[in-house]
Length: 112
Image 1 (cartoon, rainbow, N blue to C red):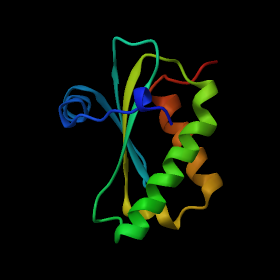
Image 2 (image 1 turned 60 degrees about the vertical axis):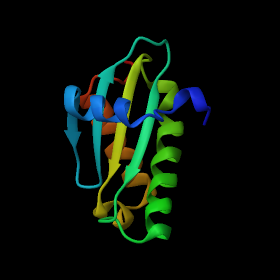
Image 3 (image 1 turned 135 degrees about the vertical axis):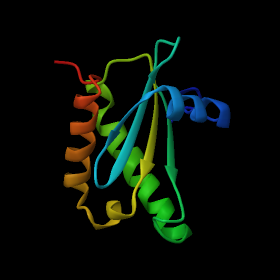
Image 4 (image 1 turned 90 degrees about the vertical axis):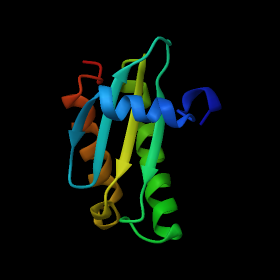
């Protein structure tokens, strides 16, 4: 993933989480806020409630992979903050992609 496609500053992540819209699923929480760019920027967060370092990194890799799979179907110009929940590790990858797609559809980010 390109550096320009990532939210790297904590102020940006905080802004999306506080001022943006949130959509919740058992496995992930999606925060969305429009940005002034012509591309999406994302941040993937996995706290200690997900597990140890190995589990957190696995959760983040799975989320990034699902995001890349769905990227061609997305509208551009949004900041996305994706927070992993502890149930994510129990989901099969196909169910994770389905759940992520459902949240993106609720947020209005999927193209028709």
